[in-house]
Length: 279
Image (cartoon, rainbow, N blue to C red):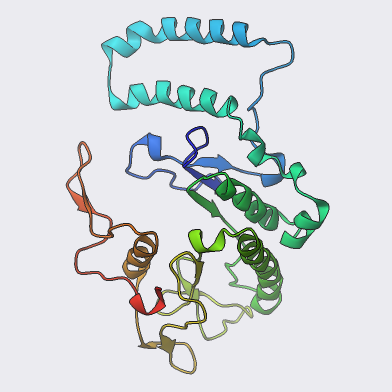
């Protein structure tokens, strides 16, 4: 991994992303709202020298010193850790990973000139510099209305970026060690509503995986002809997570102890990976 870049980054996540959830704030991903804007506020203001910056930082720490000592806790200390992480990132020699202008016009065009395509290109640049996890979100699939005009538009954006990513990773020799997961939280109803749309449907939907640890060209499971019910190879999100961990060479059933929380596993002990799609 890269010791000066964040371990996780979320692109286009918006304000509703759960970030680190119940895990400590040190596990919180770096949020990038606009991939083309890069990492904002990551450079010193013109005229500010490194010496002056360090003096101001030391002064700030002295102001906080009594408070931190009196109310020492994980939450209070996390603020100091956040500043340290930010400064380390500002000084990273790999900060240019966030700068899409370093890419050729042809490369940027191949991913798609929309925010999602450029976000996926940014993900490739970050993974190339050993950032371990990057999530890129593409909204707009909540097609309660106008499903048959909106889905083709969204699919064109998705298809271009995903195909460019897979080809790019393979060309650079990175595909075998990079796991690509295309997923969502639920599907859409097989039937059409009165607004020419499809509603939420949690009973059956599909996803795709490619790259590290995944056997290409395999289809697992099937629905009935109309897509109402899973009739073969039914799995759920727990199997998905177990499969991701297994593909990455991580024990999906390892136990963890976190302060203030009961012991938990990544995935329940009786939940197995989808071995048919694993190499």
